[in-house]
Image 1 (cartoon, helix red, strand yellow):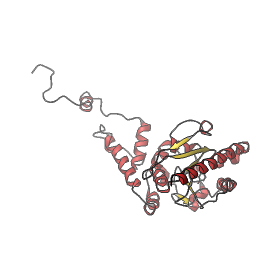
Image 2 (spheres, rainbow, N blue to C red):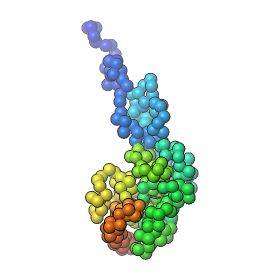
Image 3 (tube, rainbow, N blue to C red):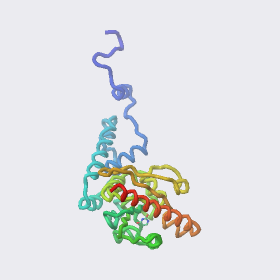
Image 4 (cartoon, rainbow, N blue to C red):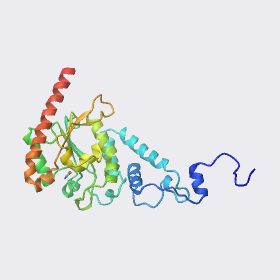
Length: 274
Ligand code: URA
């Protein structure tokens, strides 16, 4: 054997890095935070993920596997399992200060699904989304297009637990709650989804741009499991923003009118193909 040549099969990249003293392999902090959140592991916990373990940090795959297993588990849940699961969820740090998880409210077979950002103080106390001042405006917005909370309408949030001081939820928190939102959509199979504000848009469409750029666009949520068709999505302003920015109420009204027209089209299409 010539000098410097190792016997046996060639080393893997990971083994090689370890040999030359360059392990552990690093994962971008943000990727890791999202992976941890999706796996249901607290972001602050010291290195205990299989992929981060102090002795062998070179195996990020189990992180993704744990996240996928959690997502799959939630994707199999019905309504009776969903609420207790969210109530017991400790996937991100928001569980530490919540009084309760706020899953959603309304008709579970609704045509209309409205999605907001996250519970605020009153929602956290009462366990129902949009019961504070923003909720009163949302109810008025619903009434303006002849809708009523609970009557063919379901209301949920992108994030189920209240962020401290009502701050905007972080990307990892949104990612951690996404399996619940996705399951809600798959169970309800609404004909139309209205996204209230940027966090809701981020949760469903990804980090795709400003709210202003999303308004008025023809957007779709891919067909959920068990449904043959995608769901039209309308993006509009969050009611809490509208309370602070009255001139934009007219734009929100335009969005609602567009949503109502899309709903009529969706219903007519469904009636034709029935
Ligand atoms: N804002 C939201 O986005 N959701 C609520 O439930 C309350 C206020």
